Amino acid sequence: MSLTKSLRLVQAERPRHYDPIATRRRKMIEKLDEQMSGLVQEGEGMKPSRRTSRRVRDSETGMLVLRELDQVVKPWWWRDAQGKFFMQLRYGTRPIELVKGKPAIQAESREAMEQAIREIIAAVQAGELDAHLKETAETIRARFKR
Image (cartoon, rainbow, N blue to C red; front, side, top):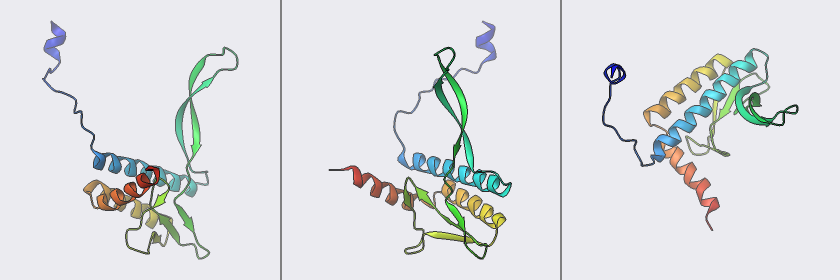
């Protein structure tokens, strides 16, 4: 009886519908967070990577065990000969053009690029890129139709 008194019990049902807009936003924000951490890692002289969990077979016991491994993050950014940073937003394998014919974002320094990524994350959360994400997702989906 003390358990039911200590917990706040309510009547709630898990939503059963799929919200593609929220899913696209979540995926883009996750990838932008990866790019941000990769940019910071590269600035510290490390290779951009993220931790993932994989099931691998233990050579001694033959059992499947869960191990954390480093997975390389393919950077969306690059530097030119003058040291300026450029970044191309991607959804899946496709670049996203925020303005027609201009798919890259330019920043003067690593710190400016980090700030640009923070601004993009805020824009995605606010829904400003929903139309671009939808258009790119439909382009990708069209390739799979027969």
